[in-house]
Length: 217
Image (tube, rainbow, N blue to C red; front, side):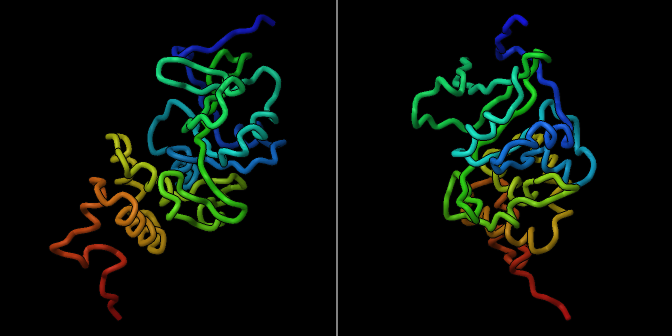
């Protein structure tokens, strides 16, 4: 087989959750569906069409995850308008995500977001004050590790795009009360200037926030 190299114009082939689980069955690295892929798995149906599947892993475990992939798959990082093999990156490079290229498909098949964590806790990469036990940050849904939707909403709160707004409008009302309260407190403390925090902060009507409502008997 002739080696083919990916480019920024290489198309994406979207994998379903079961295919991702099969692909990563041999890795000992911690991984979970994240972003829109997590929303879709959590709800049991797609919110909207997406061009790619996204997962996350802990930064320090990416090498183990990539090492478990079948022959013909390679890991790349996008730096500006360039693509660099993950193995060629300088030590200490601060890369937010990696892309997996499948030579047989001649397509990108997976985006891996790189996050932080300890043995027992997920740690928000943008601000380590925000932490959760792994069992709350990553849920098992149909035997697929899936990022909790309230955690995905924290990631999206910093600079939400129109698609993020549309996702939030569906996901947020469906959150259990405990999850919604955690999310509201998280964005107020971590992303207080987010456009999403305005509706939570509500200084002229503070009871609007879930965690500040009077409980009626």
